[in-house]
Length: 134
Image (cartoon, rainbow, N blue to C red; front, side, top):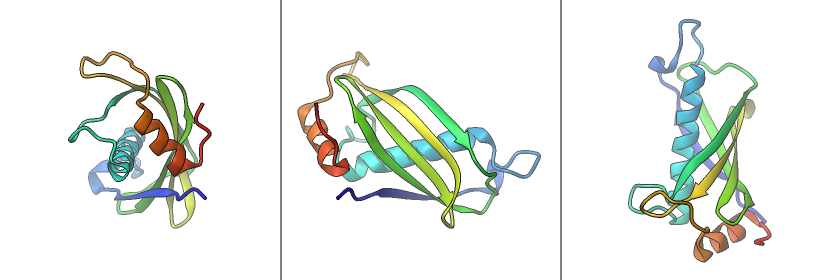
């Protein structure tokens, strides 16, 4: 059974816009922090850099967040392609969904050229997320 990965962040006072709610751009940062923690937990980082680049990203805002909220970000890989993979993110506070995000990421080499996802990474994702590889 899949073990959900959850990263916790505290939203800061300076994350708010003039309406007193967390600015939409902050959600991308929260997702990036969760992604970094997720990959670190799986041992898939090259030092402190990602072995992939962001291809696409979407966020659906459900409820406004406020500074000081502690949010949980559930991150998971939901699709493995040859050179790319998809992740989903659920951002919540006290069990209430604030936003949902999705990203497509492309595995790259040191020169940032797309390459096939390495076998060890594929195996790690498939085992952690109960995914079919292939």
